[in-house]
Length: 255
Image 1 (cartoon, helix red, strand yellow):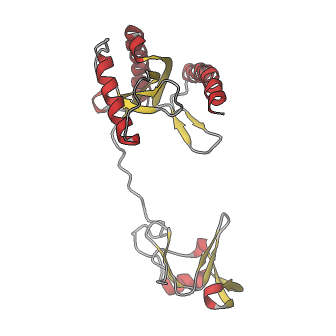
Image 2: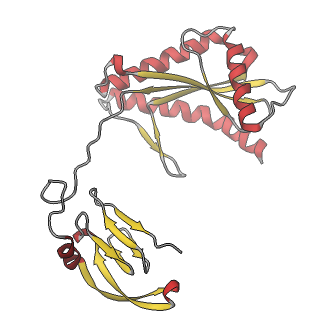
Image 3: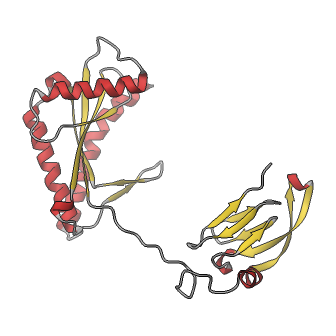
C-alpha cells in the first residue's frame, strides 16, 4: 500500500504543482493580488505565501545551481505577493526548508535550509540537520540508507497583524448593554424536557436564544442555548458565561 501511494504521489504531485503555478500566474495577470488559498479535501486551507518546488533526488546528487535558481524564483514570487499586500521589504521574513527522507521510506522530515547561495558543501549541513531531527523523532538513524530531498520550500511572512476585537455589546463600550438578568429574561424561549443521566432522568430545562444573550450574562445549568448553527447544552451544576467577545464559556461542575 505504501509503495502504490508513493508512486501515485510522485506522479501526480508535479502535475498538480505545475497546474497551481499556472492558475496563480493567470490570476495575477488578470489583476488579482489577494492571497491564493486552496481548500483541501480533508479540510483546512493551504496558503500560497508558502511556496515549494519538487526536485526529487539523492542529497549527494543534488543540482545546486538549479536549486539556487528555484529559490531565486520562489523568493521573487513571494516578495511580489507581499508587496501587493502592502508589506514593506524590510518587514519581510524569509525561511527556507527542505522535505527530506531516507530512500525507501515514506514519511518526510522538514529541515531548515541555510540562507545564501547553496553549494555542494551545503549537503553536509543539510545531512547533519536531517540526522539530528531523525534522531530526535525516532531515537536512531538507520545506517546504509541514502538521504533524499523531495521538495524545496520557501515561506515568506510579514509582521504579525495587530488585531483588536471589539465587544459585540450594542453600546460599543465593552460593557454589557443591559443588565444580565434582563438579558437572560429576553433570551428565554421556554422550557423543554431534557435527559441528564447525572440528574437521574428527564429534567424541565429552560431554553435560551443565543442571539439575545448579551456579554457577561450567566446561566446556571441545566440550560439549553439554541442558535442556527448549533445547540449548547449546559449540564446540571455547570455555569455558562457570555464573555466580552460573545463566546459561550462553560465552567463544568466537579465530579
